[in-house]
Each structure stands twice: as structure tokens, then as C-alpha cells.
Image (cartoon, rainbow, N blue to C red; front, side, top):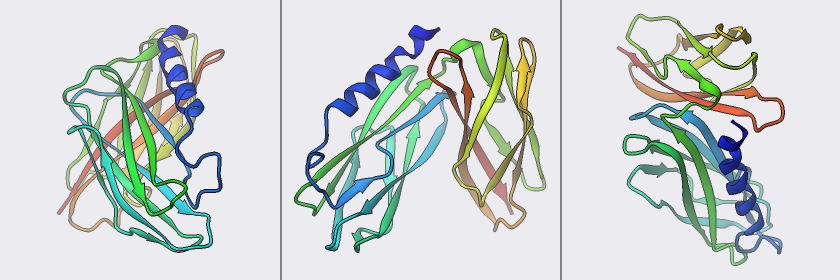
Length: 232
């Protein structure tokens, strides 16, 4: 299975070696994260991630535009002017509907920074395929009005032991994710309690969380689970 993760390492290395404009000089606008890996994702779902840019210079800078290179994704952001020390985030939405297997896409950001007029950020995923035969169960969560929590699992069918290393919750004000069983021998399940916030206003909330598992001798095993919460 180490070969299955080789594509991720190859892509990451290529993106690091090919430096963006201004990378060798002192740019003002920069990123906190250039590459986001969703890991394994189910087919025909929307997943989300917030990229952040910050102004490390002494002059006010402007984000002119942010664009994606396919119809499968959209981006949205509010603030376009960054005073020195300011940070701005924009949300990426990626639809897995027309994909299967390994996916690599780019986000292009045009700025007023003469040292970095264009930045490229990247997002990766593996759609509908699950490395090491480790798969979330269910692959997505849907909360109807009145539902206060659900148990989510990750079934370990092939590895000698599966250990949950990290949980990243995109919108902590919308859901919380608490592990109730963080280790699973072969044939057992990792288990988590997913709970929507009690203070949500009426509406539909789309978010996700990402799980990271330690794999000895290989890249971390990642998977992203979409969550939809409906409140009246």
C-alpha cells in the first residue's frame, strides 16, 4: 500500500520544488498552507476547506481575484484588502460528483503584491477509494432537526492496528467531534461522537471533519467526512 500513497509524496515534492512567483524575494502576501489534502472522500459529496492568506509586509495589499480551474469547485471570500498584519480566509468548495480516484486541483490568487502577483494553492483528494481498506462508516453524516448526536466509525479490515492521530473540525461552532475509541485492532472500529452545536440558528449547515491516522513507514492516512446539519 505504500505505492498507493506515492502519488501524494510526488505531487507535494513537485509543488515545493517549483517555487511560486516571489518565493525567493520578500513578498508581502503569503499563505499559511499551500497544499491541503482531503484524503479519502466518498463519491458525489461536497467537501470544504478554508485557505488563509496574510500580509507580512508594511504596505496595504489587495486580493484582486481568486479562481479555481474547474467547474467542480467554487471559492468565496469577504475581505479583499489586507492591512499589514491582517489575515484573510476564503472557503473552497469541492464536489466529488464526477471524479474517481486521485485528484489534484489548483486555486489561483491574483494580488496587488508586485513580488507575488499570482499565487497558486493546491488541494488533493482520493475519491471513492480507501487506502489500506480503511473506510469511514458512514461516509457522510446528516442531522435532521431534533437529532442531537450520532456515532460515526472507521472500520479497520486489514491493518494489524489502526490508531487515530488527529481530528480537524472545519467549523467548530457547528459541530464537535469526540473520539470514544481511538484504537482498533483488525476487524474493529474507531468510534467517534459527532454532535451539532446546541446554539445553531435555523438553516442548513454544510461542513466536514478530517481524520488522520498514523501509518508506520508511510504517509499519514487521511479521510474527510462531510456533514450536513438541518435546523428549524
